Image (cartoon, rainbow, N blue to C red; front, side):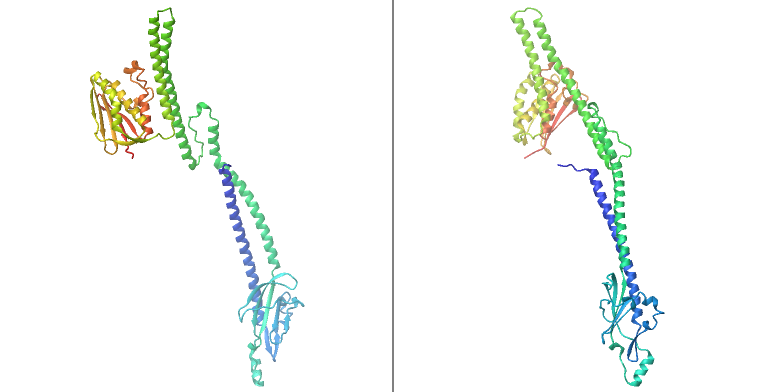
Amino acid sequence: MKRPSIRRWLLVRCSMAIACLLATVGLAIYFTVKHSMLNALDESILETAALLGNQVELEDEKIQYEWQEGLDTNSALTAGGLFQYWDEQTGMITRSPALGSGNLPKFSGTDKLPMMQDIFLPNGRRGRAVGLRIHPFVVPEEQERMMQVGRVIDPKSRTFILVVAGDAEPINHTLNRLRWILTGSLFLSLTVGFLIIVRVVNLALKPISHLSKQVRNRSERQVDKTLDLPPGLPLELLGLTENFNLLLGRVAGIREREAGFIRLVAHELRTPVAGLMATSEYALSKKREAVDYEKELANCHQSALELDELVKRLFALAKLGAKSEPHSLEEINLVMILDECLRPFIKEFANRNFSFIADLPHEPLITLADPYLVRLVFNNLLDNALSYTSPAGEIAIVCETLNGIIIRFSNTTVSPPDRPERWFEPLFRKNASRHDAAQHLGIGLTLSRHAAESMGWTLLARQTADAQVTFEIKIPVKR
């Protein structure tokens, strides 16, 4: 699938917008000029028609055209004038000298209302014409004479059609030239505008290209280094760049934690591996009795168990952290599972002379969770309490059901940590327990937090008293 391009999108849209704008302006100019020129021609034709309409006179019972009596003095009117009369009573036609034997089309409006039309002149050229109905006028002296002889003629009984035309070819020629000029200007402006748009778009997208070049030229060691903000970075890209730098900061934090995790794993693996090597070298340093070999093999086996336990915990941590699909949740009774997990630890608590209190409800606490992960969380917290409780100390488990389910695991300790949350860091162990590496690899609490979060739980650690640490599980009720 072809990827959309911001540059192409801007170029196409801006070019189309400019083309539409220029075309609209060009059309507006063309039609404005056309309307003005045609209006000027129409006004000239109407003025001529009004003048010619008043030059038809009834005299001695005959029609007289005054413009014919003074052709020399009315040369401006008659030399190039195109007009024609039709006497509707006699059918007689009178033309202007400029028409020769040609005829104008016969049409008219109603009385005193002229009609304008586009016509073809006798010579085939385009023109504009006005048609109107007129009546001859009678001077007062002629009116008195007709009354004296007893033959009064009503001028309105004699109707003439007058058509006055004007040549529109000069206007059409001018408009045709204007069309070519506007079309050429449109393409020229569009070309220049397109080049300007290309330049502007390239300048606007230059910061993006700069940022892309920074990312492309980064080496593997610089991948988590934040980007340099180029000068003149647009405001619209500032948020994107800052968020990308935040992402790179998180990547740097992850890489730093990975590097620390690898160092800690290497350090932890060194202990059982060194034990295996030392024991095997000691066993092979000289000939020994079978009993001595059995003793050294037992030490090797113990070191192998420690190494196997460490590998299992690391594998479980990696698998739990990388799991993307949702866990299989089912309806479980938290009280019943906690009772099952407590059974093997209660005897150990008694053997070490610990005071143990479990304030659990008698009724079931039902929620949706993964039974395997729930046991993992409970077992690790109980094992942590068993390992780090001070001699003859106290261990308490309290359950609350206000606004969800809260289970607290508390125990007294000889040297409470300054930052209890550090116990959730991978491979973190208190110095007091480093001799017991087979059981306490510093991964259990990390596994517990990952398991709790994968089910939507919250696991926190805090110091609740001078010598007491509490782990609190917050469980939202799901049904």
